[in-house]
Length: 276
Length: 279
Image (cartoon, rainbow over the protein chains, first blue to last red):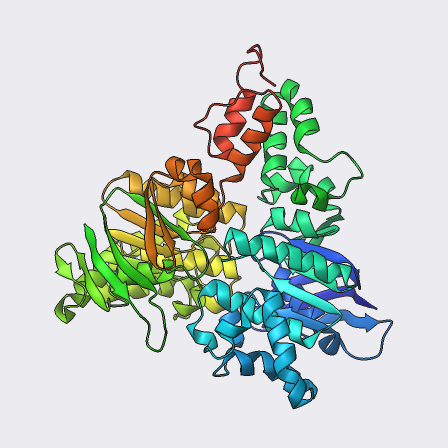
């Protein structure tokens, strides 16, 4: 099963004075079991692209489709928003996480078990959180509750918009582990993020957007070593790449040893570096 | 000065308190980071500082005005600017320019002054090209810069920011940081910000750590990062530059102990080709 985007353009407010193109001529596909990070400056079209992949925004031109299975993008994809509080409206976490399940027609007696399991996987103790109001949670907890809503739906693709924003370092480690687990279970993962360190640890492939266009589609490692590209788009690679890239331009003679000590040798997967 | 005197706060219906017996003071010229695990009370503490939340017990006093005294509300709000975690919670106008003017109109500033301040903050946050755009059409990161600009234009004595850079790209983050650093340096303003980024804690002059609603650390970032076991217990990490520095030291490369940021690390390893043990 794969998400296939062909020559996609998204234009907002078409024909109005503030018409603007969010996505222009993007072609890409994401396979189930693949992990893709989408990065780029603010306003480069990342969230719009994600919303098209989730079947929530219709292409202005081009196509977005699910291949290799029956059904629509909407039924195959779970999207966790950048601002989770915008999606909460139930009175308890239990009902909030159950909402999508009920909508999908899950049997009522199975729901509590699925909800508990989803909360635990998202890093929220069901015993403490089931009966709380979603609106009473801290920002980091809301983010995990929103993730639980999508885990419960058990979709083949999980799309995450800035999943590491506003979460603490301990929870970030759990998030990384969660994403690697989901991958191992065969889920397709797409994350939009400014957090290139996170991207390097969980993504096998990275897409860089600028002004709505794809300007790079390669492994995180090769993108992180491309100092001119990163410079041009004001993107900071993970700290160890930043260090090596900057030392290369300041004191070239010292760079090779740093590179040997700090960066993965060619061919080794970056996730190994993160886990070290 | 903002004084927090033995403050506790329990949210309605919650079993445990969000903050317990917290005391501290914040002075103009300081750049204070509030750190701690998710749910430790960081946002609650920030919202107490401008009277958006009132303590269940204890007092918060802004320049000798108690936040619980209703007659001080407007004066306190004028002096203490707050930028929310989610910019959508504070953007209300039809264009970026009007959004920035909104707070100043409430202060009763004259138009010439408003125009000057609008130009100033638009250029400082690289927002000139978005001047006439509706804020709700902007990206998450652009909205965040507009929210910062709107509050800066009011020239507060105390600026409170709740994770101001969590949605920004590297450039936006550097811009917001240079502004924060500049404000704290001119000594007329104090900046208090909640952050999850260890490298942003390292840039502050002082860091407060909350753990389960209690203030467990109040001191210099370098001293905090020296206490490894406490850091873990409080759900914090050292800045990546410090961890990389350790890795390089283990490989025989000399790095000064004071290195906490990536800039400092780049300088340390680039300097002095001939020194023994250098790269």
